[in-house]
Image (cartoon, rainbow over all chains, first blue to last red; front, side, top):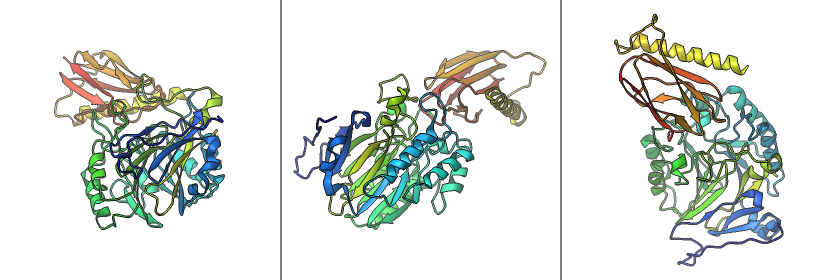
Length: 321
Length: 118
């Protein structure tokens, strides 16, 4: 744990911290004590013990937290206590050095779309220091009713199946829905109506506006064999080409992963409920059973601090251990 | 508790099957007197097994979810559609007419299968 780990970009042709060749992946398995930070567009990984080196840069003008995949109602061997681990996530949020102003929940709030599952999550999140929560649905939140219940609970003011945008301190946030109308053999889907809305939503924004896009299923091709990608995400990202700083936050795959491609930083958050295997490292993407004492090191939250003038938003993963 | 949930899902499934008989324009013919054959499909490790099942007309196919994660059984052409199946829950459908019936899990659409009715 005491060994310092730090990896920097190798393809920085323009000397601006951006890997234009477009591929950098950081598997930040929190259990190994590593975490990933993007500062000024440079992705670095740190051991947890070297957190203090981040210094004031980790404290920004805008702080928010991403939580994901609470799967309230799940009770199988991979985690019989998803209530306890969600409470641990809230404790972790309340212990952050810079209190976050709000939370994003990137879906799979519930396991089976049951009203009492949503109620439990809402109740637990009330004890977080950040009061506002912005949700997007996961596929587990829209079971049996094509998302009607989800929309009634969380979609007030949203468009279509629950997509919306808002601004915080000059950062433009876009919440997208890619878990409905899935086609046999396919991946996540945004659909034409949502894409057209998004195109219009960003049309009049200045190029210098930092953009944060959040959605449940990754908007990049993590592992299509397991459905870990979105069919029409390239179209959505094409609308964001003009912006200098785009951060894409997803869940769904129950592990942290990061990739920088041009102006876009992609990041997936850990689940608060149970881990899933690394892509292709198991027979299926089903819940991964680990020894009880390791579980919380594979669950977590993501803390995001925006500092004006920085190219990309630093995303720091904290495990629940 | 688990058993009663399974039975409830099965009853719902049967209800859907009967609805299918009512709304079809002679595509599905009831055969109350005949004892239909039953064939099982297991959902395990995010796969339908067997992936392609060939059965004679009149067969009732029962899917059982053996995973720790919920799945659905949804006809690609809208012929049948289960509610969400949690662990050990079942869905049944009686295939009365010959043909090919592709289906998938609407939650994990990479999971696909097919019933061929002869």
